[in-house]
Length: 107
Length: 121
Image (cartoon, rainbow over all chains, first blue to last red; front, side, top):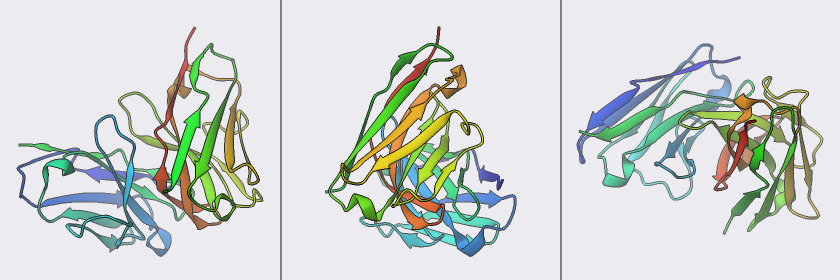
């Protein structure tokens, strides 16, 4: 099973700042089958990125994904108030597993 | 508008059974894999089970294999999760999610609001 590790556990930033979230896999993720989700408190998860770098429908272009192999990054170029949430990565190249999440909170 | 709506959650004793349902609308149900993902209180997301569009391929997490059964009826745009031999650690919000991809390699592009399953005596 591919284990995903996300860092940092918590990221404290101010609105307007840039956020960089990391997702590292215990083995190479085939074909860059890596997705990112956002979950606001009490809400359902929302797909942001799939295929490591493709934005899902309706996702603003301040969200971008990059990386390959075992190291992936989600970048939020300028944080909006609604972006303070928990972010999960998920690999779907070998079975399906999620990372533990990174919480982005207001500094 | 794509919608998936779960139902059937509730309180059940350890060792008991529960059947979750998911009603889909706003898309051609028979063209998509469907999935169950759960989230224990205050915890992260855990994939539970997937079923391909034509129900030919079914996948389970090791933690539920042999206890849970996923099924679907494309004529009714419906998905189910039969949960038997429930344990305290199965307590979670269970989400129904549409899958994109193929042959078990799915990401989840639309999610329901979830239904809470509590396993406790």
